[in-house]
Length: 330
Ligand code: NAI
Image (cartoon, rainbow, N blue to C red):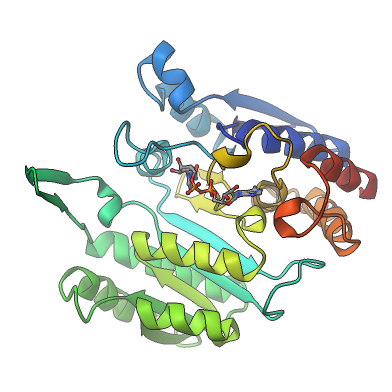
């Protein structure tokens, strides 16, 4: 039996976590969930939004499934998500983006892998108020982190039969920081003669992605561009409700959807659990439970292909109704 940490999050987090736990249980796989709360709701009792017990649990179990956690905008505590990735050194944020059956979008040939650096860049959280009218945010790019993420992208390409890795920067403007990322990419690319290296500026990438996403294969990006571009690519396959993700480090991995806590639909039984479920399917593959991963994936794809969908992708089902159909299809 597997023991897996579950951070059930806030906003729509608890609803979609409940759905995914139910589906996994119905698949026949026994998982002991080590449920850990984090975020605004625990601050009052524990003095921090990310208590040590959460990190200890993930270190112990080596793998976690995480629902979204709200971060106050423009003020308040630092993002639990950013802190978690940093504390556990989950340096690679892997966001595969592929059309799903039954989810009609502008393009039907999307099959992209977004590899986002997860530990530095403007997310290092180094900011200072110079005076009341001026603020600085410092962008940190290191050779170590850049080479590590580029190597991850090339290794992924080799293992998954991909042909090209494209490095995305704005190195024409940020010649030193993005320049270092690009230089690291070029060094690493030399070790992978069978994978074509490609370079593009992030603005041009965005334009081309919305024109024809089939022009790209694996993308590797510094943290901020990776965050933004992966929401764009989520939009290409039906939106945030279906976009999966994973944060991978050397010692442990945390699987979580691209989307946030969706406070606008919290508690309304409207949230689409697909993104969290797809993240959980990847997690099951990661721990070697391919049989159950494929079983659940088949049931999910049949559900969507039959037109059983939540409202965000054009359907009428509630979270719980959708969950029940997936379970029936198992
Ligand atoms: P969001 O992703 O929560 O929502 C954007 C839009 O997509 C909303 O209209 C929402 O209803 C919809 N949406 C998202 N997920 C959905 C789902 N599963 N089913 C149906 N509709 C869905 O982004 P927003 O509003 O910018 O952020 C809300 C909060 O989430 C913020 O505090 C942000 O910091 C946090 N956040 C947390 C993340 C995490 O825990 N990894 C990632 C991104 C944002």
